[in-house]
Length: 403
Image (cartoon, rainbow, N blue to C red; front, side, top):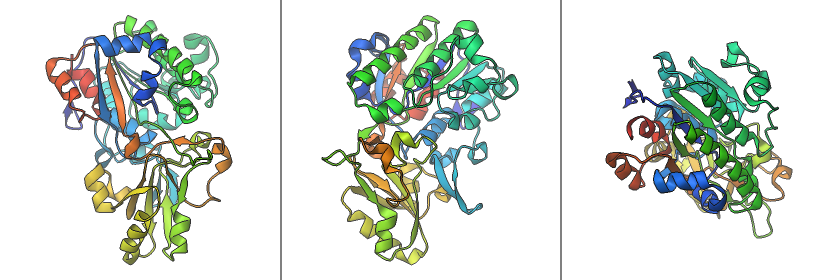
């Protein structure tokens, strides 16, 4: 069937798309010894590097993956944005912001059996929009009901244990485990499992904490594989250290700095979400709304002169370069280098949350992510994956057409 102008034929075995939040390839590379199943997928299946959507944040990329199209088409360009109609900053977690249907919803409405498990509840409403199937978050697994989520008593009947807290590394393991246990219990045609990146925000690739976490993820990847599923694993974004030499967060507070230049603005940081312990609302991408449009060139020139600011694009330039929806990104789009984050003012952020080190994402330096399949792709799709030009939101197209 055709969804958002792309073909997604029915596959005769379960297909499982997995988004490993914040997991750039170095995490897998440095955990190779404790991830035998994933290493087998890479060796015997298929592996390539792909590009995520910009901004390289959670909501835009998850919704790109499940719609198969970029933010310009699906409308989701951040976790947070300025709603001009409401006249305030809002979380972009309401299905009303979606401009197209998801692959999951359209499949479920046409006879496919669909299940979705997300670690973070912030994604659930959009992932569940118009979905006839199971959709629940590990975060609120205890609250799942048949009417709201298509399943009840997750902790008791499905998992046999309580869910971890949202800032427990193993909330993501619980998410992948839930997918495996659902598939052990009954057949699903299509499944989407998406984790949270607390571990990646706090621990570098190869650290004992990261490797322990990934070893447990690997176990459940193996269980899904044993059940005969075609598995595709990608990520919404990568992750980098964003610190000065003394370990403090490296930030350019552009709203404050532009104010000093007598350029009045509203800066929106689309990384903003309820999980500020992860990143303190500091990332590598920001949007600027100018009070006076005649100051656009002055603002752009000034920002480009700041240390760590790598790219400043006008609305039209950002739409063209990054396939963004022009009505939701302001007058300027600002991207930082690999080690810098973009902030509003020091008082706006709770820097205490990240005082012991900041790892974050958002710009082009977090855009390269792996895509791994547990089975060999056909020649056509293997050649496409090898080009390095594919996108993470090609995941379900590969799962539906590539074998």
